[in-house]
Length: 315
Image 1 (tube, rainbow, N blue to C red):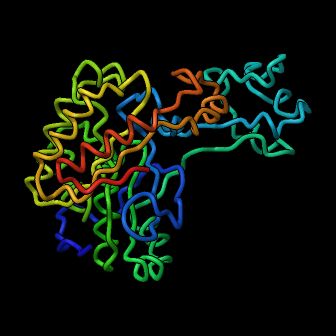
Image 2 (image 1 turned 45 degrees about the vertical axis):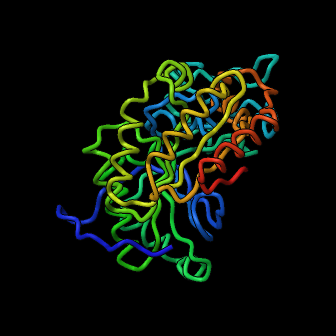
């Protein structure tokens, strides 16, 4: 996949700060080749099936791993405002009242607390990512900015992407596209490939699934296609939420109309791999667990995509 020309980005020195949770190395699911995926904190959608709830709200979070906790009481003894206590179900944390979870994390002998999120500048991030350039080069891979919604940290992602592409690194943006075009466009211009989620075509279905309408998302997909920017469109199918075949067909027909810029369509069946994260954050999982997407529906979706002459991949 060829690199797009690097555009000079006007503005201040490249020192924008961003908030990320982790850098996942050697990823093969977020674009071509071997990649490093940067998970950015903060999202403006609330997808019922989200597998990264720690990335929804902006700011630093703390996860508590009950399977590591030995109920020694060390954290209880120092927690502010009596915000940690032991109950029959395990350790209960009132995160709204606790102001010193950092100290609780440090005192725990079993490392039952984990901090999610840290600040980093675009230059620092690019420096870390370039250490693995040999893997990107040998596999035609690169770096993918994901989340959360990375485009909400536009200046940070733009600057980091520009630094990477100046060194010949392929950069992808994984976005839901739910923000004003002026904000999204500047980030899209700074990358080589866009991974784009279309969660539903019907506005009511989309709002029920994500908490927001999809007018801006669909319009932005068309805008990106007009930029001659390569797109991989992702369709996640969740039983009972967005698995109506009429809506799936409308999504695929819409994708077909985007034209040759869509180089692949990924069909993703629902999984509940993120359910444990909700417990560790003290949150309730939003939907019923144990849901399984029917193989017949996934195959019918794949077959329809083939009939529309779309390059389709069923995961």
